[in-house]
Length: 183
Image (tube, rainbow, N blue to C red):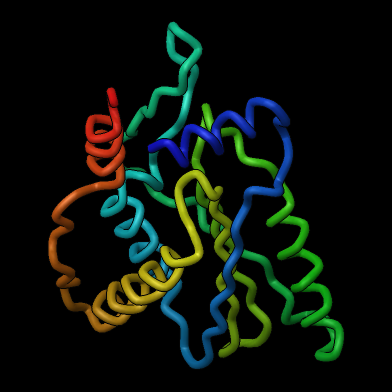
């Protein structure tokens, strides 16, 4: 899309910056099925091509989208339960900030990072950082809803049932470029 092209250009102009990263954290209490959470994240990436898209310079120097096959999300796990209770929140915030401030390589991908913080045996925080080229603030609401639905089904041993997506973001981008060509 034109918005993605603008964000790609900014990334090329000033590489290794994190100003275009978006971060969201989900607090989870109770028993956590980490396997189901990992599978739910994998399903999100499989479902949304934009989360497995990389952006490279084409022969004319213009950005080209490359959509990869679905792959497992590298869910990083951080154990904070051994810290004193009053130190956990500050250390978690420090680590979330540090991870959110790491730049993405748009040509190599992925454009999504996931970290699971274990605060106690029944309290966890899932932090997701996504480059703005793939996501906006509205998208986080959709992601939260879909992730919750997928996790609940997988944790209960059911097959998730989300409706098929009528289009992918690349389809929208192609339509936008075609529609806005010429006069």
